[in-house]
Image (cartoon, rainbow, N blue to C red):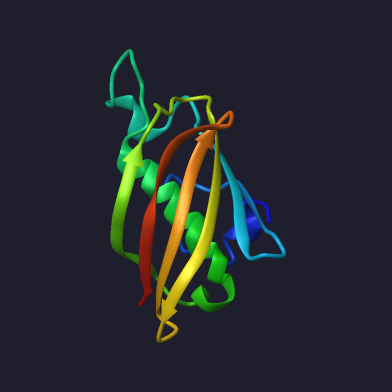
Length: 137
């Protein structure tokens, strides 16, 4: 799916739509990409002259990719974090980097609560990984 197709499922819009493209393989694993633009609002003050993508934004990139694993169920709902666990940051993400996200659904409860594992890499180097959960409201 491309960015416009994603808008059919995700309620996010610019500047908070943080997935450019995604496909879900036969095993149900999501593979997404997002290119960090030079003028991203979250890099302007973090830090002037040395822009670095904040960790919470890296988590949001992974979370949006996770939500698309259940894209048919999220239509008409808002996806909200219910947990961010065991998150680790390994390398810096900067403007111009292409984030490659891998996400996998590991559990769900009641059709409204979902648990995922996700990672974010740049040029094959692990930058962030963790367990994310979200609820449909």
